[in-house]
Length: 314
Image (cartoon, rainbow, N blue to C red; front, side, top):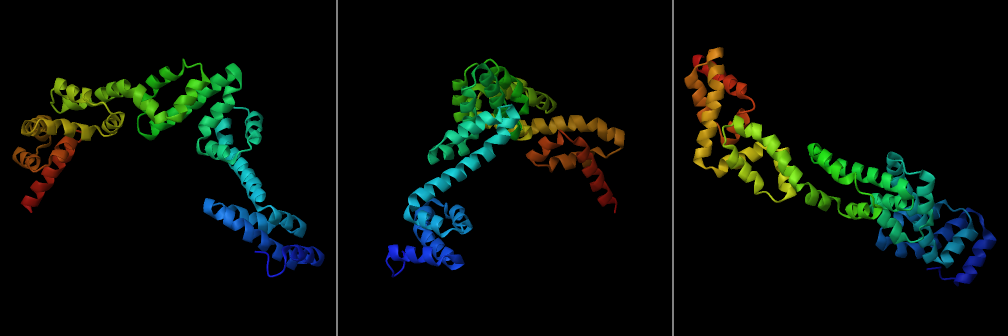
């Protein structure tokens, strides 16, 4: 709203009067027109400081005459700056020349395109690399390797990096890498399932043998897994996977774990002078989770039995 005065007359008065008061009134005019345009998109907090920073009545009145253009230009500039801020560390990390990247950013004149690039800077960097020939392919491979390795490390699956690296290194098409960048999680699920199964078997076999679990039975449980996320969980939590196998065996599995734990602890108990009946009592009171955990730290069972003995003596 301009005010009760005609808009043209008000503008003439503001230009004639000038000074801080005129600037303040002109800024109010701009805000009244811009805020309804910006608020639904959540961009008002970006635009209000821009308006407040202008100290020219003429410039403010120009904004008020075409608020849509003002919003578009300001948001475009802010988005360009935001994209540069997001993508520069990525470019520096993989060796993309920053002047080349910045030039591509500056050519973008669509807000939606900038927003998409901000949301997925890896794909944008690959787009830049695509225009750099063979060197671009090399940098694109480096970029995707860094992206995928970070995903694996974040999930505690660093052991799967070597098999994945052997899959990525031969790729000589930026377009293929861009497809991977669109769904890196899907790529990992598809290509690393066999490697994840092998990694889980390597991680779980020593534990299974230590627990006295028949390896063919454990291996069969591993081979039944067809979800990458489930394999991720099992690799990250081998105790949890061991529990799953034992539970699948019912009471026989529990008895097997108890027997194995006693076999491990018995010579330790004799050497330390612990009373075996007390040790057996401690083992009998343990939950299945505690039994499986004790396979990694049998000394804790002895410590608990010694503590129980001391309490009885007291």
